[in-house]
Image (cartoon, rainbow, N blue to C red; front, side, top):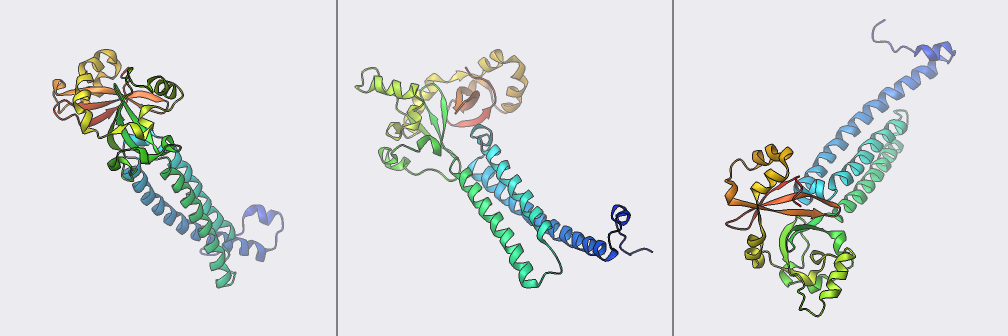
Length: 276
C-alpha cells in the first residue's frame, strides 16, 4: 500500500520487531530532515564567512599568496559537516521539547565556538601590507610581525589593516649605516626589512625609486614564453610601454609578479609568473 512505511529488508530478515523498525525509520526521517535544515543554515553562514574572508581579509590574489584559502576550507569543512551530522545523531522527535531544544542548542553552541576559533585563526594570519622592498614587493602578514614593536613605525603606519593589504615602502640599510651588517644578518635569518616597523615608510615616498627599478613587461614574455598568452590577456587594455613589473614574494612563494603603472607607480595586477 502506498504511503505506508516499509521495514528495511535486512531488518525483516533479522526478525527485528516491526515496532522497533518503524520507530527507527521515523527517527531517521525526522533526523535527516532536521540535519538538512541545519546544513542549509550552515552553508548560508559559510557563504557569509567566505565573503568576509575572501572579499575583505584575503582579496585575490592573497587567498593564494597568504594561505587564506587553505585555512578557510579547513574551518568550513569541519564546521559545515560536523554540525548537521551531530544533529542527525541526536535528533529524536520523541524527546521532550525542552530536552530536544537543549541538545540542538548545545550542538549549535559547539559549532559556533569552532567557527569563531577558526575564524580568529584566519584573521590572525591575514596579510596587512604589500611592501616595496628595494627590487621586489613582499607580502607582510600578521604573524610576520608577532615579535615586532609597531610603535617603531611612523604613526600613520601603526594600524594593521582589516580590509586587505595596504601599500608601504621599506627603507633599506646602506653600507655606510652603522647597523648595516646586523641588518643583513637579520634578513638572512628571515627577518626581512619589510617585517621591521622601524624601516617602514609611506609608499609614495619611494615611488621615484620604484619607477627606476621597474622591469619592462616585454621581459616577462621572453622569459616565460609558455605564459605569454596569459600575460597578454591580463594586460590587453594596456600598452606594454605604460607598465612595468617587479617580483612578488610571500613566504616561500616567489613565482609571482606585480604589474605597476609607470605614470603613477600604482600596482594594477598580480600574475602567477616567475619574475626572477
